[in-house]
Length: 170
Image (tube, rainbow, N blue to C red; front, side, top):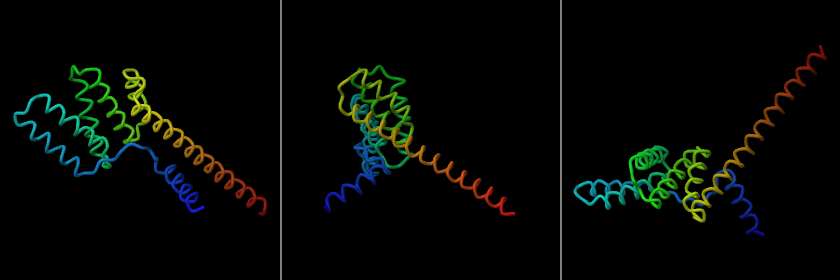
């Protein structure tokens, strides 16, 4: 019985918090990746620099800090715009961009990007999981919006009914 109650509260919590399976990244990981990039800038190969920048991008878009997520999005967009990347690298960057936009609440942009990932690799499980999380979030936000609208209509109707009842008493 206790397990069922725990599962109920977990599912309610997941509804309000999102409950997705996308990992978060702690600030110390972001800092470590920033140090890696700075070290790589000091004469390392282009391949090593690129790997360090990808790790930093991953850490930024998975960060709990909105400003980190925005930095990650900007880095990835710049990287996609100016590179002759392989299809695998493009897929990875598109996926990370989709995560960034998902984290920042731009679900339609995130869905567009994850769809582009799936054009490159239709069976990619990470992208499929992200797409499901995006669609769940859109459905949940729609349900909350409908609830808010219904409540507003109810309050308005109640206010009108009270005003009519008060005017009839006079």
